[in-house]
Structure formats: C-alpha cells, structure tokens
Image (cartoon, rainbow, N blue to C red; front, side):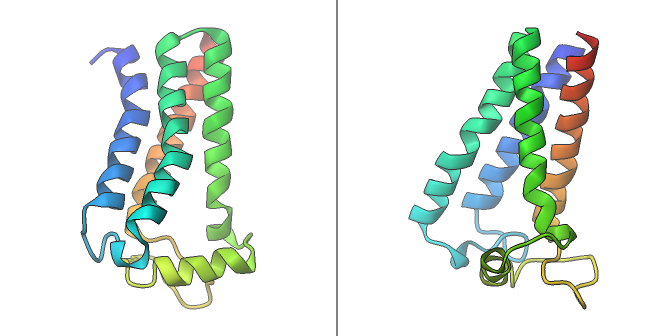
Length: 140
C-alpha cells in the first residue's frame, strides 16, 4: 500500500464505519431504535461531507487542502470533549437517550458520559486521521 493510498483511505474507512454503525442494526454495538431514520439522515448530511472534504484535501495533496483537512479533523476531535467531562446538560441527556443500551468496556460509575465501543473505534480512527493529516501537512 502506498503512502498516498494509506492517507486517503483513513477518512474513507471512518466514513464506512459510521455508515455501517448508523444504518445497520447491531445492538449492543449501535442502537438504531433511539433515533428515527430522518434524524440519522440529517446527522449524516451534517457530518459525512466533512469526512469527504478531509479525504479530498488529502487526495489533492496541496498545502492549502492539507491545512484545511487538518483543521477539519481537529474540529471533529473537539466532539470528544463530553467524554472527558466537558459537556452540556443537553449533551448528557442526548447521550443517556441515544447510547444507554450500547456496549461499553470502560467503567461507567461516576461518569455522565462513557465512551461506548462504537465511539472508541471512531476515536481511534479520528486520532489516526489527525496524526496522518498533520504529519503530511507539516512535511509537505
């Protein structure tokens, strides 16, 4: 596998994982009963274009596109703040409603929001994308 292919495939793998877990019922990995098809479609329309933009930025391999891709990935990493205690009441309520039945392997006691397995995979893929995109941006 070439370096270009490796860089490009990470956002696409992440997108594929999200599509799989957001549309294929796999309880306890993902709980599709907690949201309607319309809600999932709106969420996909709001988030999936960013992943395609990141992939496009890496594919173009121009300095400006790599910087834009790095910024987009960094903004996505911000989504993880509720898992580290920085959350709003509405986020905690949504988490309780949408991820109550999903599989968790970290301790839940004393935490308002606990990372479930589905989002642990998203987190690993996000960090891989951030590291790769940042490295390519700084080296290019």
